[in-house]
Length: 523
Image 1 (cartoon, rainbow, N blue to C red):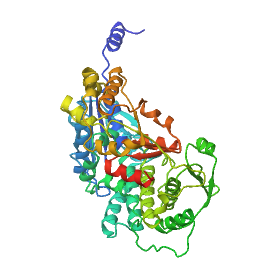
Image 2: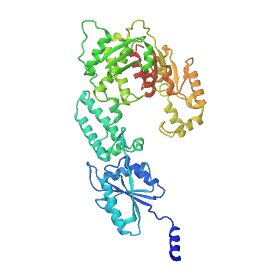
Image 3: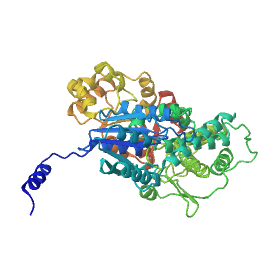
Image 4: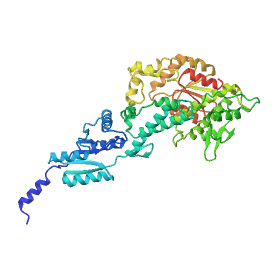
């Protein structure tokens, strides 16, 4: 028979609050602490039964990464994304697990959780030794620090290999003197590719806050200016001056193919087929395409200026060179991607260089062609200075990366007057005066407020009276694209969609640049 004392004792124990440990230790090397490690800590700190997470960094150096570097990166994470319940410190002992042994020995009442990577032999080893020494005072927590970069699973070891590769690519770039050589182009592509892979090893918020290069600095890796590299990425020797005009007249398209093949140093030339069916362009959503399966390049030729046909041909040939350099990836053709932007820019350069050699391309028409273009011109950032208007209104720099509600609130409050009072871009009138003789139409994206539409109409009436204004969401501008329509726009994604729909897009960066491209088209 169970005594009453025993029953009361059991009832009393059952009535006691849960004394599960609220502290969780997360020991490791963290060389470096990557996105997977951060997500583990974030998960542990979010658990309702954990009030404190203590990250313990081991002393061992791996791949040149020290405990001090690891601590600085952890500190940067917590500086950008504070978590009050998380503490990061370098372990007092070379092995962070020994710190946990010392802590548990010093406080015999302490119970604690200890996190470790599931499936790793080392983790199971210290789980076993800790539970053997302290019994149920230790609760193992198995975690999985997942790390995905560029769509592939990566480990801490692979992260260090990527970092080493990035450092080598920087040194390789700096050692090449000829910045216009194919060797430099390949090295630059290698750097950018590796940079993106390494960037993917760390939390997204680091890049979003512009702190990724700070991590590279902590790790002793020089950070090159990525934007400059992308802008000049495809630096095959454009400025070769070895071309000589042939004595006999050669078909201009064949001549251009020979010109581009030499300049781009193409290893092979695919079968190039020209077609006159505009319906194919609509079905392809493009005026040119390369089929790697048949090794055939298809160019739509009907009703287009010779220079425009050559521009499409140049664009596709640049893609072929990019492919030979190993630059083309499954997602390279996405709107606004560096690969597409580069092909657009390189095609323009090729066309201008060829135009010096064969200037008649800007005059010669294909059979049955009429030299006539329709121009659509964007407003904000091309003709009118949106950024200045926003700064004058708020005292802050316009940035679409901020919270949309916060960004648009002062504009919506100002109403139509914000749009009506906008000043011309410094070179806006220069561009307008150049395109005005061609009867351009304005194709502008309004905000969701009716006041934006009213304000734009009033601005047009006051500043360019008689000009037609079409209001369309940015994602729908390409609905007006045809082989003979030109869009001038400061957004690369709008231009890419326009080109994909079969139109001629000019990415506006300045009046001078846009006017030069219009002249290339014979305007």
